Length: 325
Image 1: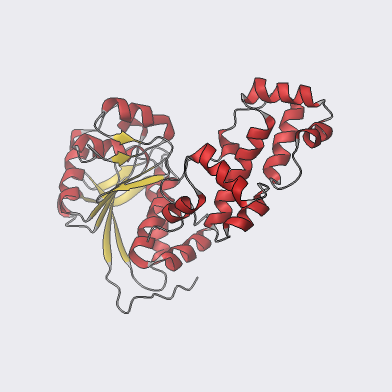
Image 2: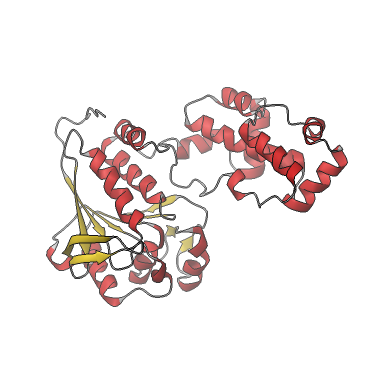
């Protein structure tokens, strides 16, 4: 990978990643790898793994992180990023809250991955702000800290100097967004290519696609139908066509959709096509091209689908999500 910086002189930013016993390993290693890739040709970041007491930290997966720096000795950071762990949902240890509080006060940006949001919430810095966390723990965050506007389905969010992200791998998306804000979309995109991850999973996007959110399908014919739609949304997926390749009557197929997916065949296909259109728009396609390639057909059909499912327009969606910088 070769990244050509656009800045004539690049300031090296210190980023402190807060770890602790039983931390989720990928919450730490994912952001670290993004920062490592950002430093491949120019030293853009100085990442430091920090813990409340310093020394070795045992992760939840059993891997030990050696040589972490004690928070009291770590100095100031441009960005502090707090990793997550399952036990934070039940209780944030006093020493962890104190360590993060001291670091966050002096930082320009403060971020959390997954349940690291519970640490920021315990400090009170998310009160009155939009925030997210792992979908499984979003209700607990909202219940325990009602002053926070919890968005359970967002991938990552920013409110002032505070950023929160969804679970585990979303820490990579969050760190890519930080790199993009610091050094531009081209640098972030090259890092994403090197890591073989999607660049365009911008903050505010859903943690799930419609296909991932689909309940498990029991019947084999319906599994075949839904798999074909997801594989090629733009193909002919009229009720008669789907019934034909499922070897079912249209009425029977409609009953299966209603009983297992709680929706109609046409509405489910439209949602899958809308997912595809969203990605096409983020990839730089025009509204007309995205409508055609997704199978929605026309600009007007695409606009109606956006209004019906997302309560927005394609133009507003693009303005909000195409880039963070």
